[in-house]
Image (cartoon, rainbow, N blue to C red; front, side, top):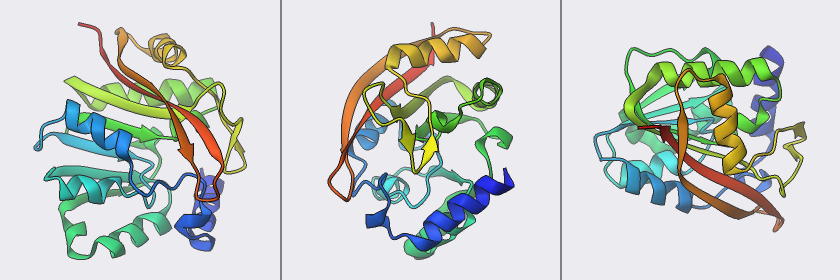
Length: 208
């Protein structure tokens, strides 16, 4: 984990947003789904939030219980500096999602492009375990990964590709309860350099 922290800190320290392939000017699909699934006072966590515009956008829309989690202290610090005094309204956690622990429950778990880095089965199992420990009974998971027709690497690192259906199967493999797909979409992300990366977006909930 120490090597990964150094890796991501170096990426954020040496590259501006327009040089990072995952940068979105505005995370429209994430915002659309959160608007559809969450109330303004719901607890929302952005896993691997980096310097994403999502947290600032949610603040601007009146969401009040927001948590930002990222492995990179550089990304976390720089985003806090961008937000200025508004940063005081956010719960900031610097660390691995696999070690995440909180007494508070989460209503919306948002993850754009963290889960697909988990190439080891034991890490995917731990991810689902941590998520289930913290998600509220009616909570939703919004999870985006590279699609099976998308890139095979992200930021130079190997990843696992998914469809919405295979993601549900992956969750159910490690869960004691059943998960089901509520929303699914394929999203063509145009990188700042003009390349297209095909993502799958899935909203999951526990089966009723």
